[in-house]
Length: 102
Picture 1 (tube, rainbow, N blue to C red):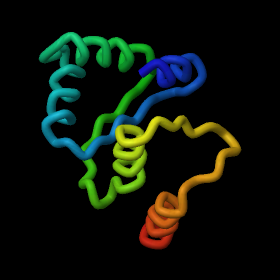
Picture 2: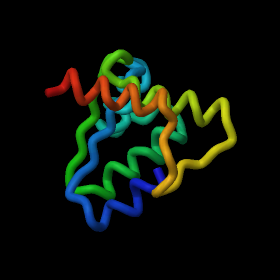
Picture 3: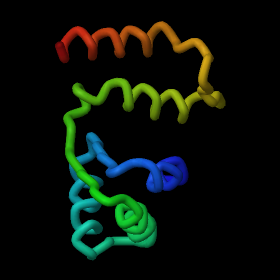
Picture 4: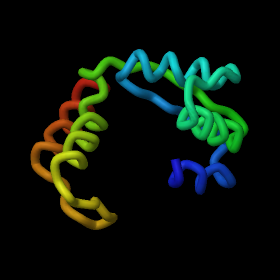
């Protein structure tokens, strides 16, 4: 959320996409002004910082790169920075995405 807030001044909008149908439904309720909890209320403030926003569900199979990054960050104490090499497993996922999206 912190990174996205920094972009609010320069980006026209934000697209939030996730593979959890329950979380996406909660985000839609939050966007309509009915956040189920404090965290979702904070996310609603993020939406308001942008001129436009979109919230959508994507199936996990189509979200493999994000799933890899989330899983990797939970299992390892590593921060990826610009210029660092990406793991071969992650590069393979990105390559598959490129192959099947074109």
